[in-house]
Length: 101
Image (cartoon, rainbow, N blue to C red; front, top):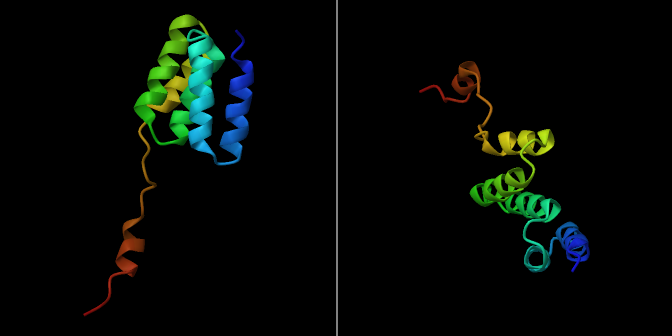
């Protein structure tokens, strides 16, 4: 069976902010063809959107295992593994906000 239809439906649900339905469609696609790179990357992007970075990394790693020379998957995975950090606030800005006593 072809997983592209449930993947397309999942994308529509994500755009519509129906993430529970999106997860169901992605799960269906995964069950149809668990080694399909587009399914794995779609699930990875969905998990990233949901804030589940470890799950996103797992799906991306599975995709890379299937296509180890794919530079786009490698780059995507490297970006997922980068810690998210807040921009540094200059000390003078912080000091301006301290009330004088």
